[in-house]
Amino acid sequence: MTLNKYQTFIFDCDGVILNSNKIKSDAFHKVALVCGERAAEELLAYHVRNGGISRYEKFSYFIEVIVPKYSSKVNIPTMEELLQSYATQVKRSLLTCEIAQGLYQLRKEFPNTTWCVVSGGDQEELRDIFKARKIDNLFDGGVFGSPDNKYSIMNREIEKGNIVGPAILFGDSRLDHEVAESFDVDFIFLNKWTEFKEWEAYCSYNHIHTLKEINCLLENFLTI
Image (cartoon, rainbow, N blue to C red; front, side):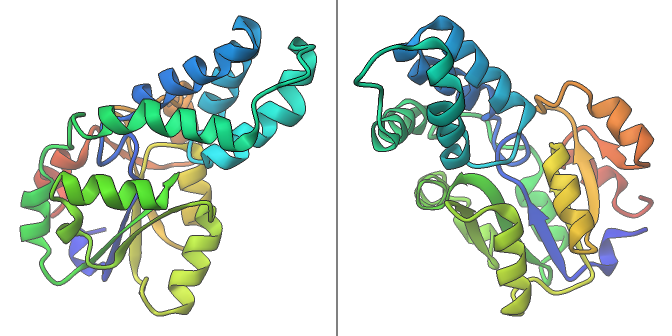
């Protein structure tokens, strides 16, 4: 295939556009420590296993499933308290973390392609971060995130005519691939910053094309 055939590029954010996976993993662990080390470790493991789903879903699982196993506290954190603490933890780091190399050059190579972000990150937070980092103008198709999940976002934006095929999704998780498959969108796995430990076996089994990072698309887009 060639990237020249696509009308829409769809990007995950964490681990694809921003080197932010570890930032968010550390934040989940730190926020959960109020309920003890074992609870925090289990939330961290759940977060890593479920890359791409929103913080809302993860904290809901934490409150409903994990906390009752480890904490007898009457005053366990509320969803709002967890979300606020988590947002405070991550926002400063997202303003300074590494941005993927090659992003601006790729935009220049494909000036007529619609670009959008479909992320598990909080939508308003993402838009604020992208604006502050001066990369929001690259994504003329919009920046979308939770509390809507990726399936809902894709379905909505396709129905609105914002995502037009042929389209390709660049991601770093199993969920990203599953979403692409569900909507008949092509997919490339970017592995440099992924926390998906079994990515090599998964991509091999599913015959998924993999590259290290966005910068590699500039070297390979005429031949992949």
